[in-house]
Length: 272
Image (tube, rainbow, N blue to C red; front, side):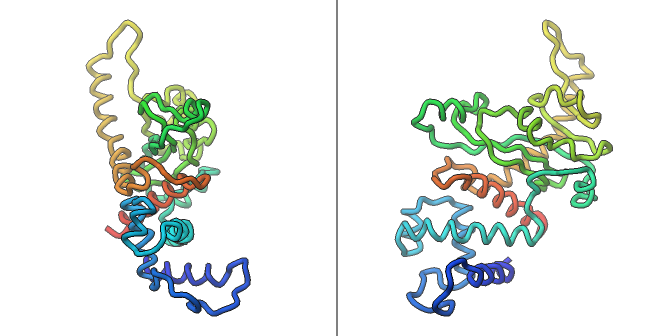
């Protein structure tokens, strides 16, 4: 990744909106001098998610500089992962697009994932972001993963209160998947089986009744297959920037972090 990171970093430095008066490297020397140090810093931040105070101590610069480096280097890393073709798509516009990007995929698991956030002081924001499932304030994404644990598609980050089915209705994640490819979902997607023929959904216990032994066995088998999606996100959550309580204040930066973490996870799988 280092060679591609250097190419993108230098290209971004040359394409700055503000005209450059001096050559690259002139003036006061940065603490992160080499491209290797810059790449290490942003990877370290995503992996360990230190406070800017701690990052400032570890890398010997001011906490404000620690902040600026993160917001300068993260878009570069994201662009590198995009050029490596490991970033998940944000939306599938058509079945043809899915086949073009993922011709080898035979099964898709659709899951919701959460990023914990600090409880907002504003009561309306608390209500908007409170997840009844997680019993805390969160931000949320819906994702489609493959049987090899790759994250194929990641929807934009939304409030933790939003139901999985509602996100599906808004983004139509399943609509771009060919009918011959089974889509495994959990009981939070009740109702999508009426729209799509390729849905595999757990049997729901009837009101006042019980599931048959055969239905219980089918639910167990489905759970064994769906665990691949959970394992995929356990890999993504190795990056503490998307598993620890989110602390950043920049708008939509949580969405950029989860996208970059998914790209790094896919990059790891591709290199394994």
